[in-house]
Image (cartoon, rainbow, N blue to C red; front, side, top):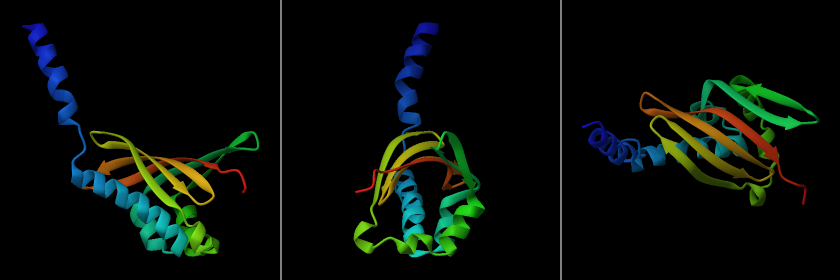
Length: 138
């Protein structure tokens, strides 16, 4: 009996947690709100994409540097992303994994790459963690 239950659980579990096409679309939309909001200086889009408790970090100069949601939204509102020429406004979204209410996404932007964790809160996907790295200057 235990063996049958284990086989049944192992068979059903992957399908029970697979992302629906609707969830995949919402995950992609959150990543694009983040990227396009940054480039256009649209703080409302950035705010829609990130959770208020966002933790964004980069390992640089021998330490972990961090910012939160309010700093990122303020930087967006100040138009720092608008300085990126249109031809360099890359925003390639790749969903790496989705399991239940958690997702991992790789977002390649013009000058850096963001590795994001998103959480499904209610019916919305929000970016809760970002670990990013600058690309080599070209």
